[in-house]
Length: 363
Ligand code: NAD
Ligand code: DAU
Image (cartoon, rainbow, N blue to C red; front, side):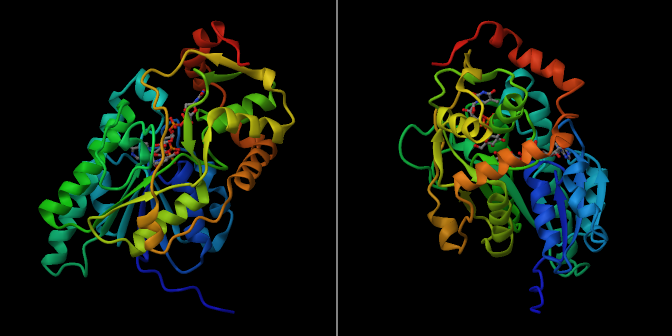
């Protein structure tokens, strides 16, 4: 049997590791069984869910290499000691839903901007300790950012050095977070890297987002609220590919660099909804045209040459990934039904109540 390769960063701090992409990263890294130890720091907001780490917690060898800390990345007292023990920090923690950022932006600034600053300061402290010979090297920080920082891309594909033109409170906060990261590279020569991922989908995705919302609503024969004409375009990236690309950049990326993580699966929202309904065997008549998202970005698309040159290639075709995702939601009602209750109902009424009341046939 071949032994797993020795990890470059044996002790990882994964912030936001109970969320959708962060938990996939944690599950996949621990499943390599290469000795990597992970501390997850997660505030367990409405989007965080320890059940996302259940596969790890039920495997004694993996569970022994996971420590879970409930805490806020914007709290220096929580962050400092954990960064002090880490060889690298991977920051997934964020408020991540555009629609919620339109309803209430303030939490986005606190976590996606100030939280990043707290992480950077903790890493800077460790850099000073490394320079004083108190640890062997400063921790590397990987900031998980998004293609939304480029704004709406009507034609062509965004490259890493394109202008940032965020258009929602969410994407503006994410842009601010990654610009802070860049400033710490320029000013303090810190070991930082940034990834910009495209629209991610897969198991354990919170049902507030398009694919899981529509799949779970359709399972219950509920209406599917499609914004505007539904011809907005996104580039879909399977969650294990996104998490894998982040791991690849963590290991091989050059300090101070930014890497686009594209899916290579550009589809209109109507195409995505048609495909998921086909898989479920549910009718298009569930789809309702509702009032559009204010400032709705029409299209995202990124050039992936730089990450490909670093040696990364996605593994999952959209059709296979979507089928696996739809089937996962059909088979895991025990995961999503509790999320779609309580607080969720208030959110859903606020977000969709008036929209659905004024909706029309989606044609
Ligand atoms: P998510 O909303 O599913 O998870 C976010 C996690 O962060 C949750 O576990 C939450 O509890 C935690 N968290 C929130 N605020 C925190 C705080 N102050 N301190 C500690 N933990 C906190 O998000 P996701 O979809 O998994 O996205 C992860 C990262 O990837 C985010 O930074 C997001 O901007 C970025 N991203 C997401 C996508 C996508 O399509 N989902 C695409 C590109 C980039
Ligand atoms: O592009 C990367 C981004 O992808 C990430 O940075 C964000 O964290 C992530 O949430 C996602 O943002 P989007 O706004 O693109 O994802 P969302 O699933 O909310 O919407 C996808 C598309 O579907 C978008 O055009 C809006 C539309 N939509 C969404 C919802 C929730 C609808 O038509 N109806 C809906 O109810």
